Amino acid sequence: MSVTPSRRVAALGENVFSTYSRLAEQHAAINLGQGFPDFDPPAFVLEALAESRHHHQQYAPLPGLKALSDEVVAAHQPGFDHALEPVANILVTVGATEGLFGAMQAFVDPGDEVILFEPFYDAYPADVSMAGGHPRFVPLRLHEGTWHLDLDEFAGAASDRTKMIVVNSPHNPTGKVFSDDELDAIISVAAEREAVIVSDEVYEHLSFTPHRRIAARPGGWERTVSLHSFGKTFSATGWKIGWAIGPEQLIRSLRNAHQWIPFVVATPLQAAAAAVLRTVREAGGGYYHELAAAFERKRDLLVAALAATPLEPIVPDGGYFVLADSRALAYTDDVALCLDLPRRCGVVAIPPSAFYSEENRYLAKHLVRFAFCKEDAVLRQAAERLGTL
Ligand code: PMP
Ligand code: GLN
Image 1: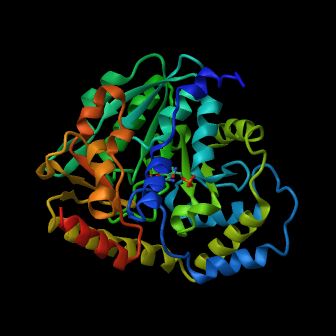
Image 2: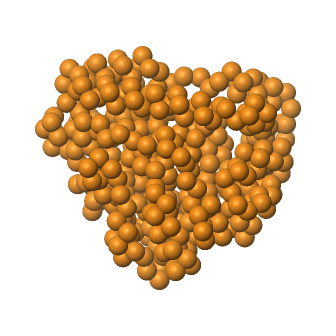
């Protein structure tokens, strides 16, 4: 057959997570590559799913099941100065992934520019190019173990064509939590260029310092769509359910795009997610604190274990991942190291160059990403194996 893919898709190639999860299977290696928990969600989450399968077999309303939108409002209202309305300000999405794709479709025209900070979550440039836009990359700078946004460099990347700025905090893969100054600078550039801010907050409950919402900063609300992930917060990444929060006008545009992407999100999952949020709310929200504390312990475990190997960990403030400096191992680059790791010691990691543009890929040459959303015993065993390098 000689049917060629569209130019848009032909340019994309396979994503790094599929490649390295396959490598983990081939070598029966410990998979610290792709970010998904290797443990079950809490029992009350599984019970909510078991219960919801008996009901809710037909399409949900376009904005999302009312029970879920109401719970999203209740869960998020304390973080916002504006009164949230379930339909006007919330859209239930197929994970944050659909929120990202939908936002690019909703706001980016061919020729528009989207500012992305590097390293970036790999879906961002793909989503920009599928919308016909052009990414403008601004590298985060690592200085004495801390990642910074250079505000001048950032301002210099903006132009009349800037239509969107994507910020992800806590950040994948660095674990950086953006400071108030950095968030304010993003708002100020967005306001000057009349651009929309997409705030990817999938790790909001996996923050080991207080989570800062850009929409709650002065001038932030009216131009920000924030994206949230049930999968991350409840260790159920396979559910692929999330929600967008924003002002009515932006959510309306996102909903217009969404109606032609999935139309609506799986009803039984929405009902189960609503029941889960309700359970957490009625119990006083302690779940969120316990989750952050549990992941902070996992972070500490992996950081301490890596410190005893030739890999030098860079301590993250949030998220699922630790980046480490691999210079002591003298590989030519991160891909060479990550392709060799499963064979040499039975561990899979992700080469962070997958999260950089061509022009800045060299910045990732001596970095390697490990996921710590895994059982403690698995993290210990992986670190032992890495210690043999
Ligand atoms: N954004 C970031 C930064 C992520 O790491 C992920 C990981 N899956 C996503 C978005 C996608 O979230 P979801 O699984 O809810 O689609
Ligand atoms: N967000 C996860 C990671 O960064 C994986 C998501 C995916 O497989 N697309 O590893």
